[in-house]
Image (cartoon, rainbow, N blue to C red):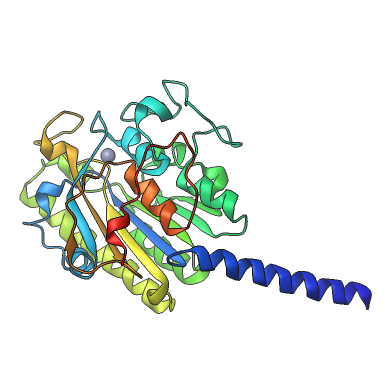
Length: 299
Ligand SMILES: [Zn+2]
């Protein structure tokens, strides 16, 4: 009997703790969608009705800057780690370990990511990462994740979408990062700003639409913030250099408590993504982070 009472008291306390944790959050769910190699230069011309609806119903900039070099791992790392390569140490296209020692490491031995901050704040939070390029897994702190899926099925983009849709409906994640490895490949093979590139963007927009629908089907729409962004853009058949086509990407944020139809003017860097997500979850960012939350997008 006593044990029974204790159990109920504990269960009640845990429920209460959960409620107070979620109460600190601006939304219960964040869906972060990354499109590798999606340059902001393409947004105006691209046929992306789902993404443009998120822009119309949310806030955005087309001038978020990548860190140098305008390559993949260094920018995904910065997006998740709230700092640039000088601090987190991942400096190249395919960095799997830091070439410079990370200025600080967490208990998992990696520079603190937004995933690990959320994990430390809420040990029970459902946090997922679904990616096509294995390089993502080296910079997101997989030990902080509840669900870590590298999609190898071909064709990858629809397989990733299917996995994301199922995961969202099944697990109702607090934070899920879904990273398509396109339009980067088309950019390298056919070229940036080409008909094939825009065709791929149109296809990717359809997948974004399916993910939005999954959030609706899961009954999560009122409590979700979507973010759609990219690591870098590109020019001709490459990226990594110092043109604005390579350096500028879109940052689109839409959903609960986010201003509608608001193109913000403030400067945004790649590492500000992590700070903005941390802000949504009421997480205190570590001193080593230099990112700034884009507080202006919230009502
Ligand atoms: Zn990339």
